[in-house]
Length: 223
Image 1 (tube, rainbow, N blue to C red):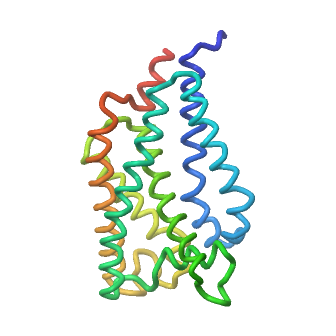
Image 2 (image 1 turned 120 degrees about the vertical axis):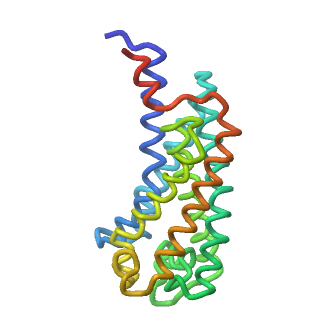
């Protein structure tokens, strides 16, 4: 079978979605007890970021402007949406809806400072990792769904929140699935924060992605 530009573009998109999907899953893997987040960041996170950067450059070099734009727009939309998520999360945390400050916890785990507690640099790293995860989810949505619709992005945000609440993270935090051992404020905070994320993500991408096509449409082009 002859390898065409369409095949090469689809492969690039699949590799980019795989690379973008690495970071958000590392915290879950770490909390499941398979390794520490500190170790996973060194051996998996940084290489995945390098791979994604190379793919982004290749998309520009091969003049796949649509793929290049979708990755860039996903990052932008994801970061903006994470600001909205953080506003809601911070309000919920201030009202007692969360057991701890999640970005600070991420920083402690990244720097392997569980015994010492957070430092300035670990907190900066925690927020950077948290916002990058938001950007990574933005890349995934942008590449998989293209322009899509705001309602679809909102549902996507809710699914991320539900996934968080039924993951090993909820058990490791001591709140139980959906926060049943902590109180209704946990589920309310997480759900509302991810609704905000999805709404903003969809609103930004509808504007930025224009006529961007979905991953399914790219696959159909081969047949």
